[in-house]
Image 1 (cartoon, rainbow, N blue to C red):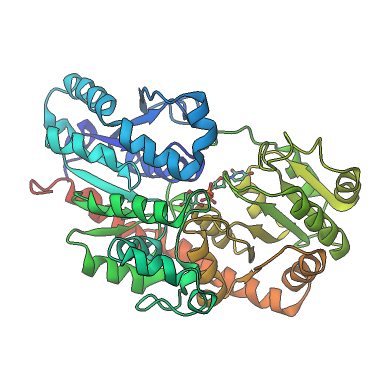
Image 2 (spheres, rainbow, N blue to C red):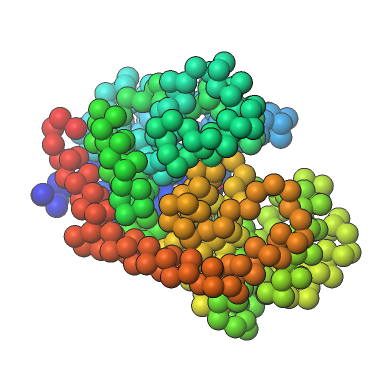
Amino acid sequence: MDEKQVKKRRIVLVPVPAQGHVTPIMQLGKALHSKGFSITVIQTQYTRVSSSQDFSDFQFLTVPVTLTDSDLQSLGALLFLMKLNQICEASFKHCFAQLLQEQVSRDDIACVIYDEYMYFSAAAFKEFQLPSVIFSTTNATAFVCRSVFAKVNVDKFLIDMKDPEVQNSLFPGLDPLRYKDLPSSAFGTLEDSIKLYSEAVNTRTASAVIINSASCLESSSLERLQRELQVPVYPIGPLHLAASSASSSLLEEDRTCIEWLNKQKPRTVIYISLGSLGLMETKDMLEMARGLSNSNQPFLWVIRPGSNPASEWTESLPDEFGRLVSERGYIVKWAPQMEVLRHPAVGGFWSHCGWNSTLESIGEGVPMICRPITGDQKVNARYLESVWRIGIRLEGELEKETVESVVKRLIVDEEGSDMRKRAIDLKEKLEDSVRSGGSSCRSLDDFVNSLQTKNF
Ligand code: UDX
């Protein structure tokens, strides 16, 4: 490959404005930048990464989106995404046309990589005849599920999903997933989830698909995707291991928790985080605090401002909550998660099983307590529990007894140490996959090489 020729070419990234989507696409940007490409990020004003955050070599453009305050407050994540896809097309095309004017030739743009859920952007690539690539921030198994959703008989499916017996049975062709493990948003109706997935699937016109996953995690889903899609699939993850570390955190990380972790014994701490969207009612927070306190294990708990619908942060929670957590816990609004998971004091991760959190936990050999909330998290939890066997799934109402028991099973019991051994084994496989010659590393090289061919 002619290195000079690659250096001149630009890749445009189009992220969904949400932390779990921004983080991996920016890591992808870093990986491609290290291969000699210039990077442009086209983002909305709602969640903005800035060039000061380790991305000084990147160009950032903003697509103005006009949503009213009441829209923003009332829509929720699912409808927000659908709305974004309805209203952004024209302003995106305008922004893109300006970017094209800056280029000497159209060939200067090697391709546009867009988050699967920013599917409105496909119209611009078609109009400007630019090669486009889908980036999936979820794993291949969840991607397969979305293709299945696009083909289901919606009326029958909606009835099936109300039947508890059906919910617990395996979904045909998706073993080990049961009906209840299929991705669907908790922030809208099942019908709306199917609508979003179908729209994303039916507007797929890209020349390739990049997935933040590795073949050692889900080879059969990746093979299936490769068979079913008419375009190449590149599993190049986990990106947080493949790319140089760069923070694209949209919230300020509270690093005092690292000092607190430094004072704890090895592998004793349970780290709790529900990602960037998860919510928790006051009664669940109280049961959680009681169970954690009874477990006698130290805990580090991320409570995002606004994640408890009844309280700004923790101010309005009953005094009992403050008393319980002050005994052996430490609370932050947002943590440097990767550093936390890497810390020797951390013995387990209580997680909503977002795909980034899942990869980050496996990448550090940390076993998990799985409490999925929405979307692909249920798929990830199923794999953590029954395929990789490095997680304990916690279903049903949160009660202090179950919280105490599950924390002890993971941190103290032999069951947990067996999971840790399997997690460490997987961590090593993931590290191998991003090393030179590893499957993800080769896949990234194949993708870069494919950009040089005329028919991409
Ligand atoms: C969501 C979905 O859950 C996920 O599966 C999908 O692929 C993207 O959208 P989110 O719910 O935010 O993402 O979870 P997750 O994928 O785990 O991403 C959260 C990110 O925030 C992680 O990279 C994590 O390291 C980071 N984080 C979280 C912090 O840096 N600090 C925190 O305190 C909590």
